[in-house]
Each structure stands twice: as C-alpha cells, then as structure tokens.
Image 1 (cartoon, one colour):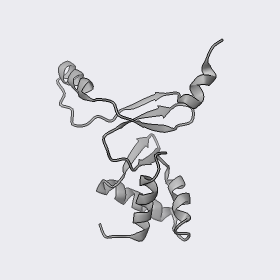
Image 2 (cartoon, helix red, strand yellow):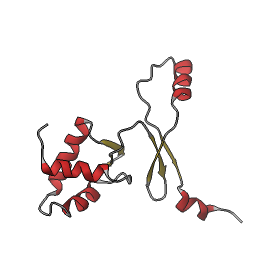
Image 3 (cartoon, helix red, strand yellow):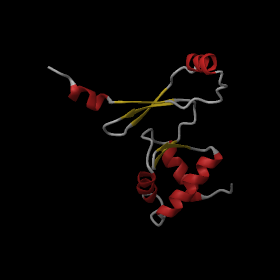
Length: 127
C-alpha cells in the first residue's frame, strides 16, 4: 500500500482514541486537519487500513466501529449508550472448554460482553 497523507491522518485519528469511533466521527475529526477530505475517501481508506491490519473493524449488524488498539483484547459493550470498553480476558479457559466440549480447534477468540456501563447501571438500582 502506497503512502497517502489522508490515509495516514485517518489511521492517526483512529489510533489516538479509545472510543472505537464510527466513520462519521473519524470524518469529522479528520476534516479538522484536512478540510477538503470527503466521506467517501474516509470509507475507502478505512477499508484499506483494516485490510492491511493497521486498524480493526468491529462489526455490529449494519454498523462498524474502528479500533486502533491492535493488541489482543475484548470488549464490554453498553446496551444503553453503545460505548465499547477495551478489556483483557484470559482465553485459556474458554479455549480449553471449547476444545474439550466441542472438539473444535480455536484459532482466535473475539469476545464482546454486553451489559450496562457505569453511567447507566446506577440508574437501575431498586430501592
């Protein structure tokens, strides 16, 4: 992949946040540095960056969020605000259970735990 100032700025924007942004958010942030960039350019470059392994796409139905954290990790997803939080969960026990119970060779584990983040769980306390 050849160097592109636009692609490098998009990668920088994704890598410098832990919010797991959408393409629209990335577009707004990149536009601050490259005012004439188009949303189409954002989408094309996000696809290329993901394909090259420079960023990761997190797919949720019809929406995609992007992650610049390339270390092995999992996510907690808030069912109220859709925030994604990076967490590291040891995979050894999960892997062993799957191998033993299903005789299935695990290559990779992508785990998303869905619940309510700190901003919302307190609102559901019962008196």
